[in-house]
Length: 76
Figure 1 (cartoon, one colour):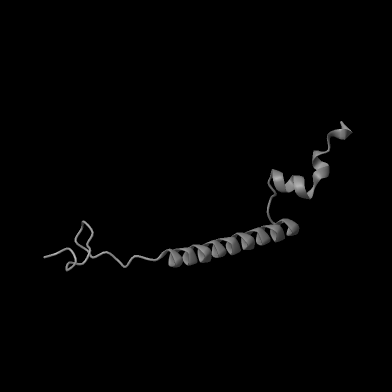
Figure 2: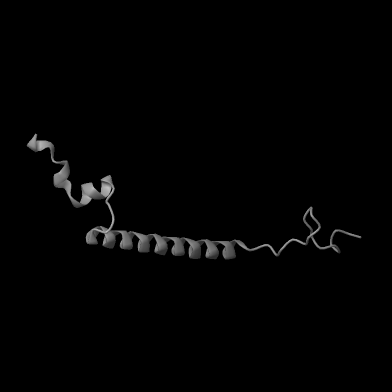
């Protein structure tokens, strides 16, 4: 009947899963950040290839970085 004898349960009657340690959480977080970073790098590389090939339209920042002469106001 003591609290030590009963498994810890949530309010809905299901037993709680095993808690993770801080080291496990940090390992998972590092892995997730690595995956996200790799995915973003791949998307950026693909976007740069598509811009170079002319298959997608550039946004304002990309146009300014790739063709700054478009924004040259010294001609006016």
